[in-house]
Length: 458
Image (cartoon, rainbow, N blue to C red; front, side, top):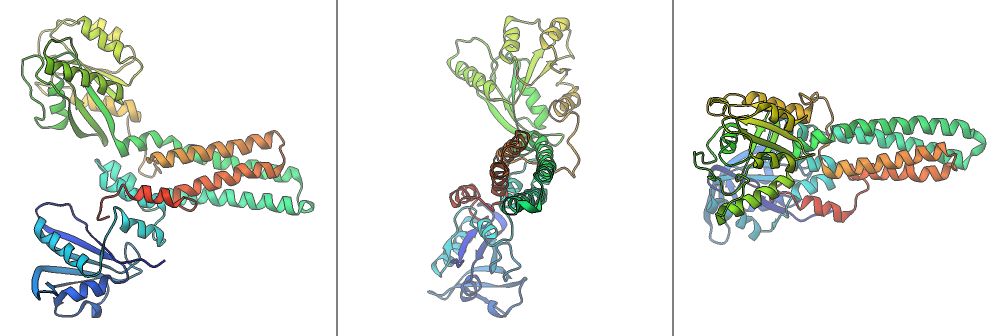
């Protein structure tokens, strides 16, 4: 396919030492060459080299920017097209002047994700690898980044490709049996089908076992800190974030709105929400905060329920235990540096199977135990080996489940002694669904939708 030449700013907007404007397409080098003045025309330089010079506006013949220009010729580029990257000073005015100059001289402004989309359409990467690019950009912990990096390097693609090849061989065997039944016994065909389909089903189940952990690593756990006013919720948030994000005072009801922050707990990203203390109040502003807290409670993946070691359990505390019934909860009894007034036996009874942690946030005691409890609750003490192929994308998880259903339907059909051509329908559908993960059998509208989520310069 022939494309026009696109351009976009590939670095975040704002002030910085360097900004990069990227060009990709057949006219990338000629467009840049018309504007660049250096020791040598860009048309004559070697691929994958960088050159110092100035950009000149051809209309005024005046310098626009002092730049370093990288020239990379197809096919050894990210998009498999000619790519030029212009390094200029990182400021809103300077980088926009460079971009506008390119757009005025033959380039088109790239759509969101269009560079990565071209890499996919030109066969450099498949769809799952393209989706991993955005996961890599959005990764909030080292482990999340490693999952995205492995996917971008094709680990999931290779595994899916192997399963699709197995299904393709199975389909071919069925076709031979249908077209030339005299060369193969029905019993042999069904036995072979059963063996190969069982293998595919087990492999898909293995991948799906990592789905929960992978999704957590990719999206983070929505974590709500709840409790009565003045039990130490804001102190807990500050301790996990390692900075004073929330106001901490002895006055009840200090937090009147929800405060959000991402934190990294042993490789697990938590989207931490410090809520207003849940209680009955006549204060209009605090009342709104309490209602927001109740809403956050419904949407959270993890609840950190904080109690006060220095106060007796109240009906409000007991109501909180009722409100979080059936959720993933860790109970934290804070302020153990003060005299005990809480009935710990009653707390243990209310907590039941929930992990129970005692802390003194003032003395920074108990945070390690809390972090370990979070890790054990969702990762059974630790994240699996680095060699695991994690599946973290919701689209991939849904497609793998669909493929598994079709494989199991085919296995059921074999058990019921259905005609072999009817079983083949489910096998073919499983092969097609797996192809949607890597983009072999995906619709154009879905491709457009996926790449529209990318930032402009990627």
